Length: 163
Ligand SMILES: CC(C)(COP(=O)(O)OP(=O)(O)OC[C@H]1O[C@@H](n2cnc3c(N)ncnc32)[C@H](O)[C@@H]1OP(=O)(O)O)[C@@H](O)C(=O)NCCC(=O)NCCS
Image (cartoon, rainbow, N blue to C red; front, top):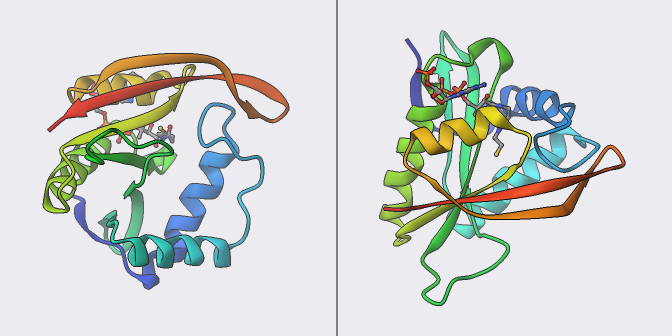
């Protein structure tokens, strides 16, 4: 059975491997190049500096998934939003890890005074949209052609959950 805990520097190789695999997918994470393990290290340090938690799901010493809160690219009037992001290793999917990580992020968002979560998802990422809906997120916007991945325009779906 997997366990969820705060991420540490020792988890970086696992986090980087999962991130790199997800970047290869056409419908997750709108960057074309995963960068280096050092870039992920900088990301983890930035989250720490900003006061946003990062979690990992682990089993038998293996990192199976990671999840983080972040500042959305826009602010609502009360600055009460946080953005949720998560990634599960392909071999660990459909075991309830995504659901457990989203529940952890919701609790963590409350602890830092945020009362609403948003998720920005590629409109073709049916798994992620289904997961967020299953966890009580509701679609608030669909924005055609606002993203680009591997040279192709992508649609964005914004989902929101009030906590
Ligand atoms: C999307 C993702 C996070 C889901 O994680 P997961 O651990 O497989 O999700 P869970 O096992 O907790 O699934 C919970 C529920 O979500 C829904 N769901 C999850 N993945 C699904 C899929 N591929 N197709 C349809 N429904 C899905 C189901 O209702 C599922 O419940 P069920 O298994 O009892 O039917 C995972 O597929 C992933 O990391 N994908 C690549 C990266 C990514 O897209 N990240 C999100 C970017 S916004």
